[in-house]
Length: 112
Length: 112
Image 1 (cartoon, rainbow over the protein chains, first blue to last red):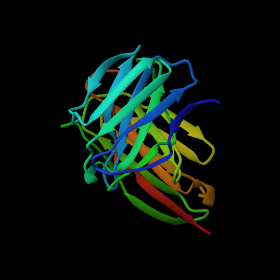
Image 2 (spheres, chains in turn orange, green):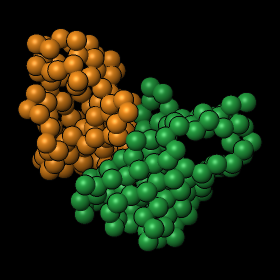
Image 3 (cartoon, each protein chain N blue to C red):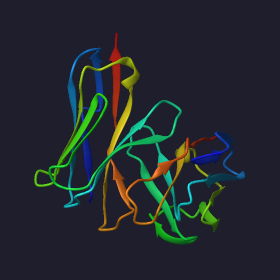
């Protein structure tokens, strides 16, 4: 596989469920990102990891918990979400300090 | 508050016509990105503009950057249906090389 791969592509969960989103990059990058894309709003940066260390938390509620075990994998653990958390969650990677971020296709999340 | 404003947000045009999408940003950043997103797909990098006066062209798309006016433009020449997509501009924010602030996107529909 090439590029940035996200699984699952679609996820429906109840407010009391716990689920995880997975992202894997095959580009040899050392920085990974989580973004939230909601209808009628700009893409919002959530978290940044550089060499497995979190370097940015953009005031994200604690019900979103990221994990980066190595430079190629990034997870977003979800628990007790709210309906307003329904959105497209995009993962991206880049060389840290590099020009271009490469995005995955996203996970479409619906919280019921 | 850092802002990136695109206009128009919706653009419907006929094949063969020309049009320009505008991107205004509020910081002194001199690095500006254009991305394309097809429905259900990831964001694809189109252009990176690194300095004042930069102009880049790929096929029917041409992007330019005026850092003094804090304005970037994406010009579409002789549009074809395959260009139908959502186009985002984004700029570096916070003085770092990795944090991007995105506009809301311009949904372009090219009609036969």
